[in-house]
Image 1: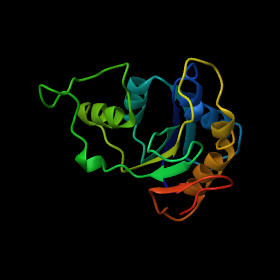
Image 2: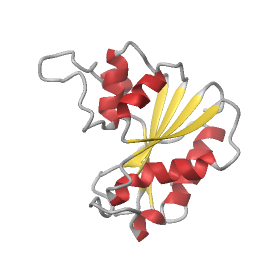
Image 3: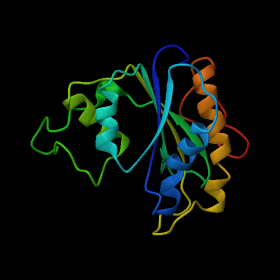
Length: 175
């Protein structure tokens, strides 16, 4: 993923505990030197803004977010969504063009497609949340997963293509 223009986007709501995971990972990555062509940004809950940012022409997206997959809290995942299977927002009567309160990764990709944009490759670095409740700050378990997620993003940016859908806890991401 080292070639081309890459956006690393941290998303989540910092007022909902572990939902702020992606924002914290982006904050840490933004303070580090990264390869040329890599941009790190905290999008928070601004999924619409993220979709419009992607219209600027990125070759790849690494989206960092809390991801509920039924694993142990603090588990870090690297996932690759099937972008070809995403329906454009508003493509049928049951799919609204946009819901600013529900901008999940799928909704961002759907809006991007509806706007006529695309990205060649998207990966999600996610963490299984322990608590998504009204409070500031990550739980201890999810806070401990921030550094392994930072390492996972760095590895994605500088290493060979990853094996995806692999969970890990603790010191790194298993592939």
